[in-house]
Length: 372
Image (cartoon, rainbow, N blue to C red; front, side, top):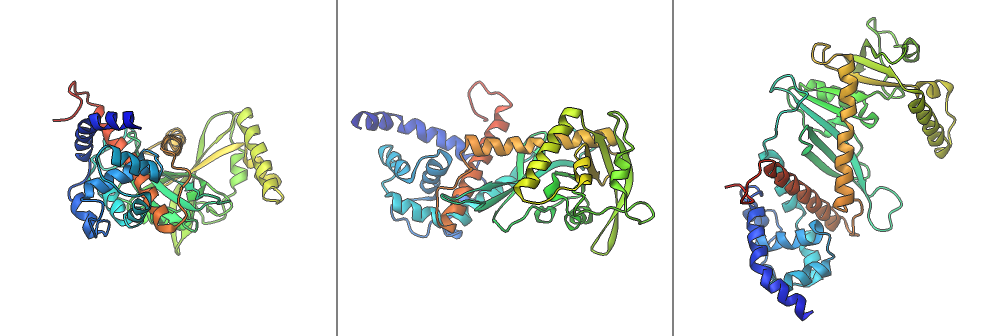
């Protein structure tokens, strides 16, 4: 133990230098916000906002237990505080951590997407991932997460409990946004929300809860149209849908799957039906042979093939979740109460955002290791 204490004491100045560099990526006013947001009401054991944030990042960001984080803080001379006291501080820090992460997102400047036609459009992908508390048999928390392409940088997130469903309606939309989503986001009211705010969607159609109309406002024969697909050539049809007593125009783009992909999808559908103990309809099984995607922008923006290629890009957000949950160990919340669980998730997201900012800066290599 004495040897480790000596090593940490020798490296304390270096650790401080690295922290000073990392702190440059934090938004203006983050120290003052620690008091206004209720994270630093008293300085007992923790002298300032910097000390508190470093402790939280040691625990949540670096994956140390509360006891390990406080022990390391003591050895390096950062502060002397018990693990119980740190847990109490963490519980009260969730609003402050949310303030920092929100400012980090709004202050960032992102590169334009390689898919955009002009500077007025952004390509975004939204999805949600689940986070479990210890002993939970199901979802305890849900993180709704949006990233920009091609940078793969987060531009929006929200933490909700298990009742917070996937919907476009919780996402702030700007004029010209093109937002990619999977079947979970295929709800008429959510798509209408995007359109009403000047955005567009590319979303995997869920035929069960998203009825389509043809140009004459008659029910669209989805399976009948899919059967007209020949070979591996994509095809599209002009469709309409009703939401909030309004009619919206859209395009349905489809392509036939390869035999291998179709068979895999068929088996997955049968397995899912057995798991939920429900009978699968022959029409549902037949639809597994195809991929069909709803798009709301004109053909001149992206043609049929480009829409389908665009949907493939949606899987990039899955990779972001994989990195966050595996590399950052963010798939399991080591907390049993609501306040500390939310704060822990916020600290994890803050760590991911800081890493993304570091990566963005590192794309312009500096021999001296930092930006002047």
